[in-house]
Every structure is written in structure tokens, then in C-alpha cells.
Amino acid sequence: MRMRMRVRAMGWLLPVAALIAGLPATAHAASVASAAPPASAGPAPSIGSKNFTESLILADLLQLEAQRFGLTLVHRRAMGGSAILWQALLAGSIDAYPEYTGTLRAQLLPGLAPAATDSAGQAELRRALARAGVLMGPPLGFEDRYALAVPAAIAQRLHLATLSDLRAHPELRYALSNEFMDRADGWPGLRRVYGLAPRSVRGLDHSLAYRALREGAADVVDVYTTDAEIAAQNLTVLKDDRHFFPRYDAVWLYRRDAAARWPALSAAIDALAGRISVQSMQRLNAAVQLQHRDDRDVAAAFYATLGPAGRAAPAMRGADGGPGSGAQLLARTREHLLLVGISLALAIAIGLPLGVLGAQLPALGRPLLALSAVLQTIPSLALLVFMIPLFGIGARPAIAALFLYSLLPIVRNTLTGLASIPAPLVLSAAALGLPRHVRLLRVELPLAARTIIAGISTAAVINVGTATLGALIGAGGYGEPILTGIRLDDVGLILRGAVPAAVLALLVMGAFQLLERAVTPRGLREFREP
Image 1 (cartoon, helix red, strand yellow):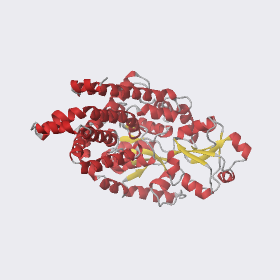
Image 2: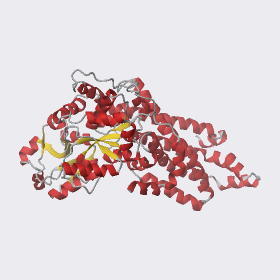
Image 3: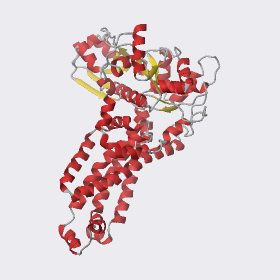
Image 4: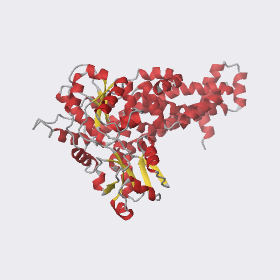
């Protein structure tokens, strides 16, 4: 119901949707699809993963198991949180992703009894999913639930063993993951059930919370019970003595129509049932998060140990090489330029005429500026999520969001540039008998060119930076190494995305400065320049 309401509320975006709908899929998906030989002709099913190590590894393992059944899966990596993946699954943008039963009950399918873990409760959960056209695979063999943890030294000093013990210490500083802060099975419910009222609570990325603990900037964090950092940082996991958290058995969710189209997908999901223990998952997470190994290599090594004994893991690498290779940098650059270039071209094609129209009709110009300004106030990640029902997952929703963010500087500067032309110049052109369109093209737009190009340049630079968030929904680009680096607390990986993005922004600014000189009439250039 909420998805249908969003689509209706954004009906004014349909002209842009028609343009973006015909765009080719991002090159990122194509590079991932090349990770294994195709099993058959036609499109391959796509699977998604959340933006944390464990979800990536589970998706890697399913890719490997599917290859054994002769099926190639496209892995859309690190797409964000549960809400994004669930919405993408319902929209058909992905065909499967790994989830946890507690998340299903408390967040995605509200109304189900959170503690119902018996066979009747499982049947109820499967029926609720079936109504949405979704199937649930068997448990993978481990539970990864939420918990709160504190450094062992603080636990010993304050005698903290249970979540109830936190109530007596409101002075402790909480650093909680952004998703946990908003989930029904997260902080809002936990605070209410345990009567917690800490003085300092802030949200941040899950991986950064551990860094905050190391640096002494936080005392309490939310953890996944399979996190490698729990042992590495000597943390004490506080007992859920009021049984607030439900069970979080790891399972695969997949679309019913995908199961009918690719029976091997169901077979691969069933084949992984019960084969990953809690201890194994902890070791896999540690190999990626603490040893900084690539999750695909870690998954392949583990997969080779699964029965039948001696089975070799199929190759996982695509044609873009390793994480730091020049070929991968080139691929990320192509993806980023695709996002920025197409969104900026659409914004120019629509924003420039709107700005001209607003300058000719001041009564229309003010509402146009107000609407463009309102679009800028929408958080970029929220805008990306809003685009998913319209465009699915990948480059298209990212391009749509970037297009909307580009409108304000282009519309505003076009309006400002045309309105600031001295009146005598406009009157002189009219007195010469020049037709209206000739005055616009030959007099007014050249005089306003500097201001207009400055707006386009600003939009382009904003796009270069904001496009890094596109990696959250499978759009690729420089955001992919940045998000991976944040997840792994690896500054080197972050710089592999941040530095090229900064260089690209500088190149874009320089290019528009040259363009400004080229289109500004020489006499006007000499008049304005010292």
C-alpha cells in the first residue's frame, strides 16, 4: 500500500521516468555477471546483499552454489539496509537476498508475533510472505541477532551483565547503527521495554561504532552476535534478560516467479540449508573485517570445505580484476560518469527551459524556485529509496535522484542571470525590432551565460559527490570502494573512491570554466575581466 501511494504521489515525475526507463543498465551489473560462465541464454537472476560483511559473504556463497547447479547469479553488492532490499525484492529489481526471521517479523511484516518460533509460527511467517509473492528458504544454520555490548573494562567496573543494568547508568554514551535507531525491533522498542534514558545517543554506520569504542568516543554499541569485533575488542555482550529481541535465523528470501523461472535458484538455496554454523560465520566475518581479505575470496575458500569433500570452489572474479586494479578503477570511473553525465544532461534539458520560462513569467518563476528548493531538502538517501518503486535497482533510480538534485542550481541561475540583464540592453534590442526568440538567443542568453554556466557547474559538482551514494542501490561508481572502506574501517579503500571523486569534481569545474570563456562574447569578457 505504501509503495502504491509513493508512486501516485510522484506522478509528476513520469515524463522523466519515461526518459530514464530506456537507459541501459549500469556497467556494474554487467561486470558482476561476468564472474562465471553463463548457464543458459537470456537474463540471469539477480541477488542482493546488505551493506555489511555477513550479507555479502552469504550472497557470494549462493553464487558459488548456484554455479554448481549450472546457474549464473548477478550479485548487486552492498545495496543498503533491510527496507531497501525488501522493497527491491517486491518490485522485482532483485530476485533474492539474505534476511533474518526477526527482521521479517518486527520490521518488514509487522503484526506477526515476534516470539513465535515454533512450527506454527514458521508456517504463519511463510503464509505472510507468500501473500507478497515471496518464498523463504530453510534456515542456513546460524542465528545473528541484535544485542548491546560494552567494553569488558566498563562492564567490570560498573557490574554490567544484563540490559536491565544499563538503566542505572544514564551517563554512558550510546553509538547505535542508523538502521537500529529506527527499527521496531531496535532502539525505540528496546528503550521502552527496559526504561532506558541515556543522555547521549547518536546514530552512525555500524562499522564506525566499533571505531568509536576503540577511540573512547562511545561506551555502548549495538552489535550483531556474529560480529568478529566482539572478540577482537574484548566486548561484553549484555544479556537480553527481558527477552526483547526475537530470533534472527538467517534465511534466503526469493520471489515465487523467480523460483518458477529458474528452478536451480531454489535448489541452490535449499542446498545451503543448515551448513553454516555460528562459529563458521564468525570466522568468515573476521577474515574480511580483521584480516581485510576480499569477501569473495573468503567465501570461495569456505565453500571449498563444504561437502562433498574436496569440491573445488568455482572462480568468483569478474573481468575487472582485484579491488585495487587499474581495470576496476576504470570501470568505477565509467559508472560514475554515466550517473553524472546522464542526470546532468536531463537537468539541463529540463531545467534551462524552466528557468527561461520563469524569467518570462515571474509569477511562475517563484513557484519553480520554491519547488526546486524543496527537492534539495529531501535527504539524498531517502530520495534514492523513493526512486526504487519507479525505476528498480541500479543506475536508473540514482540518475533520477541526481537529476532532481541538479534542478535547483540550474533553474535558479538561469532565472537570476536573465533577470539581472540591464533593462536598457533589453529595451535596445526590442527597439531594433528583433523578434522575441532572436532577442533571447542572440542577446539575453549570451549576456546571462556566465551565471547559467555557473549554475550548471555547481549542479555537476554536486552530482559528482552525491553519486557516490548510488552504490547503496547497486549503481556502482566511486561510492563502492568508499562504502566498502567504511564497512571494513579501511582508510585506503575509502581513499580509492574519495580521491578519484575529488579529482573528477576538480576536472568538471575546470571544464566548465573553459566552457564559460568559450561561450561568453569576447567584448563582454574583456568588459568584465580585470
